[in-house]
Image 1 (tube, rainbow, N blue to C red):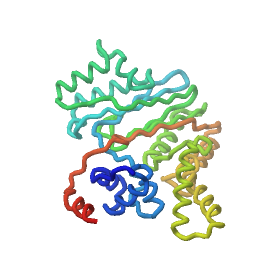
Image 2 (image 1 turned 45 degrees about the horizontal axis):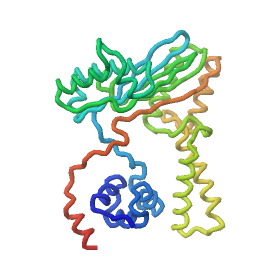
Image 3 (image 1 turned 135 degrees about the horizontal axis):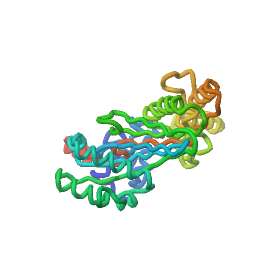
Image 4 (image 1 turned 60 degrees about the vertical axis):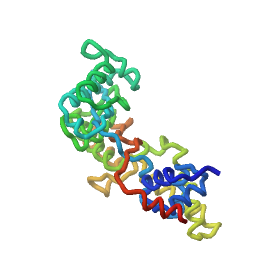
Length: 310
């Protein structure tokens, strides 16, 4: 049996939003496994923040860059982290983020971006010099790219602090021979939708089977906890899984600007309007600080005392 420390309980509490004693119980039931404990809390109907297992913590900026390539386009999005939001408003930091995003158009991972030439040196040299100048630790954390041979890669930046710089960056790849301006308008609308809804996959076929099975396990356990008849649980859970897929698959989601229309229908209607086939080929959504834990300013002593007395 793993030792259930106060620090471990605190971590689960901050991730789930659930009280101390329930967090302690969840960790005891799952042998100290944080992720399993979150699922346990969900199954018990206790988690107030089931989707907050990864808390936004790091500061900095998301930057996007786009490049035309004949009848197609390519685009890149990066996460450039610093220690404080104050630095994210620094002009030198913003200039660096834009330059690094442009470099990322030709690279697919952080290591190759850091090693890439920039301004007579490398991206890593630029970052190192910026650290010395500004006085905060910073680094390129993530890189993603998207391209289409014919069509557009539309982009959208949420909570923008400057052009192509903000807290959330989204790319949407659309293949079509239709008018690029119209395609970009469609792509931007879909990108704004993605920024708001955070879909897990483009379509049902690309949804990670592991995500489905994890959700099925949680829903099955929850149905049991609710006292549902054993012979009904499979049917109940199957219906809930179908609903889950519609909620997390982009093409099946109701369009946020018109909930009576799905994204799939939006694309089909636009294709009919423009008189040319339109295909969504992919998307990237990158939110600042996803998966990085941030210390929370709170008085923990009283809760620890109450836990240890239990």
